Amino acid sequence: MDAVPQERAREADRMSGEHLQARNLSWQAAASHIVDDVSLHVMRGELVGLLGPNGSGKSTLLRMIYRILQPARGSVHVEGRDVWQAGARDNARAMAVLAQENSSEFELLVRDVVLMGRTPHQSPFARDSDEDFRIVSEALQRVDAKDLEARMFSTLSGGEKQRVLMARALAQQAPLLVLDEPTNHLDVRHQFELMNLIRSLGLTALAALHELPLAAHYCDRLYLLKGGKLVAQGTPSQVLTPEIIADVYSVRALVRTSPHTGKPLIEFLPDELL
Ligand SMILES: Nc1ncnc2c1ncn2[C@@H]1O[C@H](COP(=O)(O)OP(=O)(O)OP(=O)(O)O)[C@@H](O)[C@H]1O
Image (cartoon, rainbow, N blue to C red; front, side):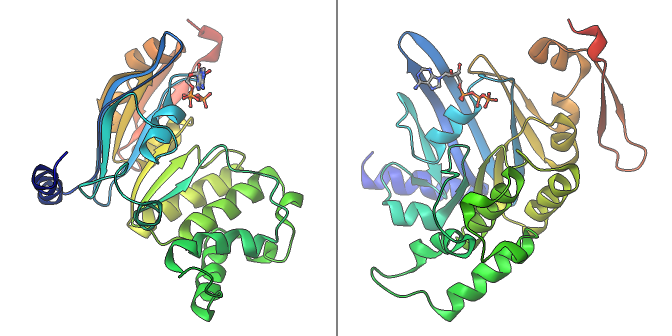
């Protein structure tokens, strides 16, 4: 795109409050469509959930958004800037990622793994500053992992690793978080703590999630994928209906409104698999 239309697109996104805009993204492997013409947006400050069964294309879609996988078609803009035209450093300042394929075998101390999040803010060859160490320490505290900072990352449990990688994303201090199954490996308390944390930060976030009750409780809006296509979008009450859950997950569910929160409460009836 030339400079003038791109500047206009950036201004339009800024005006509309859209922080992340993915348009018509497609990706295929061999002859099959893994992600097929999916568009989504996340408004500034929103927490948006990306749902779908195993293999529905969530990670592939996120990987195009966080610029690991070049889309076959479509575009991704963050604050109006095309991520494929921006440099890696600019992208890292704009978007922090908690990916599924993070190396879980870093031979590094936990503190040093989290310090990696500071790289986009440092000049080449600069030493870590006191401010970097303060931010790392605060990020570890926020994910309840301060006591792990002197441990080797490779010796942590799955849930501890996940929390440390979340701390690394927080230490990056980017205004947009893209999270691929952030609650993976976490026990129920740490699941709630992590989702509360994401909410409380007031950042913009897009998260692939498997736990429908968590998505119903925490997300402002949801996108639901099936076979690489977007099949539903809207508020949790609009998306998490028994009909849609049956169609997409082939599981029978009852959905009612919580008298405490006004949000959907989902009860699965696994003996009645469709
Ligand atoms: N490089 C590739 N080559 C071939 N097939 C691929 C490739 N990458 C992904 N796929 C296939 O695309 C489909 C979507 O994968 P993806 O990881 O995006 O799904 P997902 O919704 O994140 O799944 P899960 O919930 O299991 O993590 C899967 O069937 C996967 O096997």
